[in-house]
Length: 279
Ligand code: HH2
Image 1 (tube, rainbow, N blue to C red):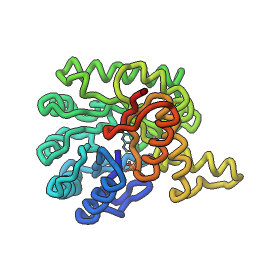
Image 2 (tube, protein in one colour):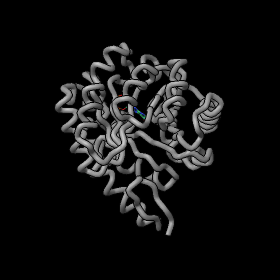
Image 3 (tube, rainbow, N blue to C red):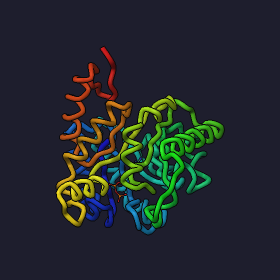
Image 4 (tube, protein in one colour):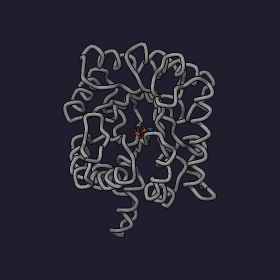
């Protein structure tokens, strides 16, 4: 899953693709690099981010979704939003996946928008909300707590008419989690795979990678975003080994190559749909 951020303030590429033409060109480039899914988002969810209105989100993403549809690219399109009105308009413009980082909690109309349209969705764990989520997050056992949350949101979606086969689950790396929480979730991802739905992971360029590298090098500040690709690859390869099947990344070509070799090493085969099959 390649990331197309149409935002002025995303943590790693904010402002780079605010112009619809630049965003569509970036989308084309990610498909050329081997993305099976493009995740288009018009609202940053980085720690501390302020919410934006539905009108502003639509103003950002609709021209990009329409531009991608006009290109007739061989790719599925996901809309990264927590607002039902944005999801509905995006589906009309060609999106077939709703990536809701609030797991259907932010907008009571979201579950119906997904159920009515038959779109796929990704339900992600987040403790609190982006504005405040990194203020001393606490869990009993982080993996047990995230697993119980995802199980509960999956059953809520299914009771409201979303078909279970259309749901992916995501532990929400970096969303209300310390470095130790993120690492524990990645290490024990297999316990979430036991929920029986495809797992999506999003570690790409995130600050925990920058902080681990800074600690290792004795540097005071997290290493810059441009130095986080090797750590992104390491975490995605481990996530593959522990059962993830969708990898949300900014650097598609590099991660895809790493996953292809890792999957072959594990005795699996990398398929066009980005899943592995044991041979
Ligand atoms: N991470 C981000 C945004 N959306 N969606 C899912 N399902 N999982 C994630 O881990 C995830 C996500 C944050 O990354 P990015 O889009 O690069 O930054 P920003 O939120 O600042 O736009």
